[in-house]
Amino acid sequence: MLPLAQSAPDAAPYPYDPSYGPEVQFGLLDLLFGLGCSCGWWIVYLPLMIWMAVSCIRRDPERYLWIWIIVFVPLGPVIYLLARWLPSSDLKPPKFLHRWTRSREINRLQIAANQIGNAHQYVELGDALRETGQTEEAAAAYAKALARDNKNLQALWGGACVDFNQQKLEAAREKLATILASDPAYKFGDVSLLQGKVLHALGQTEQARDHLEKHTRRWRHPEGVYLLATIYADNGEPRLARDQLNGLIQDLEGGPRAIVRKHQFWKGRARKLLRRLPSA
Image 1 (cartoon, rainbow, N blue to C red):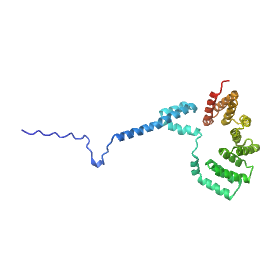
Image 2 (cartoon, one colour):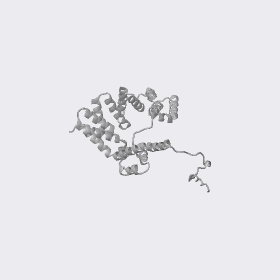
Image 3 (cartoon, rainbow, N blue to C red):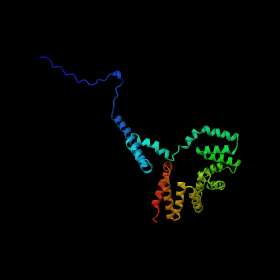
Image 4 (cartoon, helix red, strand yellow):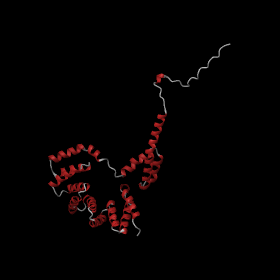
């Protein structure tokens, strides 16, 4: 009687060929890592999409087009962030980055100031230093410019900005007063607005109120209108505060789209303050 032949084990349907390289084994850790990467992507992407969608609905005059792009187009939130949100925001690159990218320019301006030594060269140097966050060095440059020409409006303006940032409010007030006495419309109202902010920060509420009332009749800076409204509200005059806030909102709603997008922050703050005011 012939012995029964032992059946060979089933061969693998796709045998491994060593010439392809080492065999890769996938385990539980690999699966968990892949899921983690996928979840990590959605943890970032989903909040970004919600943020951009809410911002679009609230602020963008072309919201009905862009909301579809945000929700349905692949990478739509990223596209909206780069194309619409960032250009309309007040975000600026970090000042240390400016300092690094403009180091050669600042070095050139320093050499020109040392060699020529006129007020103009020190003002240019001070402006570059202030824009890159080097406030102490900027203050020194403006001081040298004023030592050569104590009526130089550019040096007075730059020095006042540095003083305000450093909370040297009285020094800033004096410089701004000198500018306004010479040219009330200098910097298209920016000097006047900063003077109102300085007076308010100094606690000189009545002077700040009188100044901002005159300022807002000539220049409708949203920040100036809002600051005047807060003074009215703090003084227990909600009707006057409400008039200013409603006027601010109307100014922005009727302005050019670029201006509206740029100042949406003040529109939101105005509406928030309106809700807190007591009813008339």
